[in-house]
Amino acid sequence: MVLRNLSNVIGIDDAPFDRVHRGRVPVVGAVFAGPRFDGVLIGDVEKDGADAAERIGRMVERSRFLEHVRLVMLQGIALAGFNVVDVFALHDRLKTPVLVVARYTPDMAAIREALLTRIPGGREKWDIIGRLGPMESVGNVFVQRVGLSLEQAGRVVDQFAIHGNIPEPLRAAHMIATALVTGHSRGNP
Image (cartoon, rainbow, N blue to C red; front, top):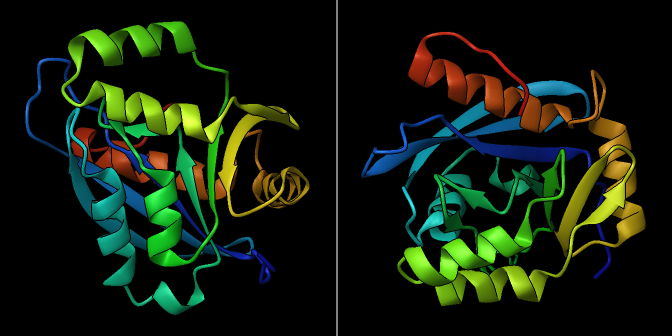
């Protein structure tokens, strides 16, 4: 795939929620054009559900930013607990690369155990994670990717990690999502 300029990015993160919460969890998309913060998208996904890729795809498609999006960046492979984002379906739907970013490598054995023993549809969710492959180190973060090379992922992380290790679109999405629920932003993504 020949990539267009990856300067227009949507960073997506979920809002905090109680462990006992059931139902929908807010999801925020922070839209950036290079270093400029350009807009916000707000949607939701089902806690521990299987609708993340569909809901994110719809959120982006219905936005005024659709024609400019060159990359979707996710804060982790799962939103709202274990609602694993089918990054392959999202990539196919939006015809846009998808980059998963994490500050630390997750405990894959614990994730596999939880998915296969406690989460409805866990086998399918684990299959998505397995198909995506292990996280790769890029700078001071770890990534998984669809539709772009490791070198391109590194350039995107370097370009957008302005005020720390986490790229600005994810940092902004995290702060906005937190403020939606708590009334103020806080913490690191």
